[in-house]
Structure formats: C-alpha cells, structure tokens
Image (cartoon, rainbow, N blue to C red):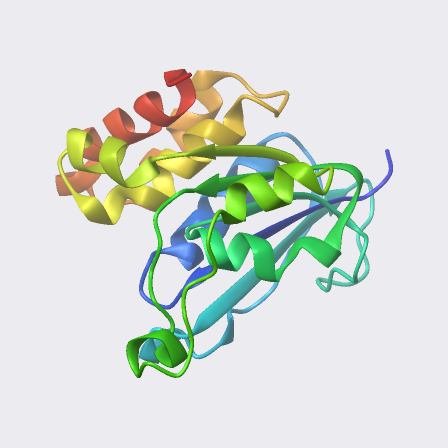
Amino acid sequence: MATKNVMIVGVGGQGSLLASKLLGRLLLTKGYDIKVSEVHGMSQRGGSVVTYVRYGEKVYSPIIDKGEADFIVSFELLEAARWTEYLKAGGKIITNTQQINPMPVITGAAEYPAKLAEKMSDAGIDLDAFDALKLAEEAGSSKAVNIVLMGRLSNYFDATVEEWMQAIEQSVPVKFLEMNKKAFELGRNSR
C-alpha cells in the first residue's frame, strides 16, 4: 500500500504527543510500518506544535511535506488553517472548533481571524469541524480533547472500535481509562 500521512497539530500542552502515540499503537497492531515524528514547536510554552504519523508497507522518513497529508487532525481552529498547505488533494481536516488566542492576539498586536471554518470550506477543503472541547468536558475532562479527536478520526480508518480501545488501554494510565474511553466514543459517535 502507498504510505499514508497524518499530521496532528495544535498548541503546546493539548496532548498531541499522546494522540500520536495512540495512533501509532493502533497502526502497529494493524501490521503497518510506522514512523512517528517528535513534537516540533514551542510545546512547553503554548506555541504551535505538530507531530507526523506516517504508515504503510515500508516508511522511510517521518516527515510530511506540503501537499502530502491525508489527514490533518487539529486541536484548534487557527492551527487547522495554518497547516492547510500540507493537505493533499482529496485529504481531510478534522478540527476542534475551539479558539486559543496566540501571543499576537493576547498582546493586542493582531486579531483572531474571523470565520476560519467557513473560509477553509469555501476554499474547497474537506473539513470536519466540531466542538471537541464540549465533548471532552462531557467525558469528564477538558484535557480529553485529544482522545475525542482520535474518536472522530477513527471513523475514517479501517480499524475496529475494539482495536482502538486496546490502543487506548496501552496508552493512558488506568485511573484515566474509563474517561478516555468515553471521550473516544463521544468523538466517534457525535454527528
């Protein structure tokens, strides 16, 4: 099979590393060769971060170039817009509609761009935008946005719910397991 590419983008501290680890574990159980990048960006300071997950029969590099991402999973709306040039033709962006102000907006040097989801859709981007934060809070913690997003992504993968649940069990501490399973189910089943 051809190599497939998933970018996970967001703001530092949102759990993109756990999301990429979870996805990597799932893909390993499916028998794929996988490369997962390290986090790039100012992850400890609330800055923009990106991780790459590449999988296929044989993967040689963890880096995704512009126009190669089959999926971009975004924890925040502006981050989804920031990385659109990496999406391939026919690719999909799955994004949380939450807005986290970057430093230029916080300092008053800029305004958060208006109607980003509409602008991306109008530009022809296949966009699956939803309020993942609300679902994470419903599951028990605002920190579960990453697992809610993985639940939504699971709708586009050839893997069973049981396989995803096994990957969750291998990726999160036992004390947070039920909350994360609920977050996954809410993300998967919300429409």
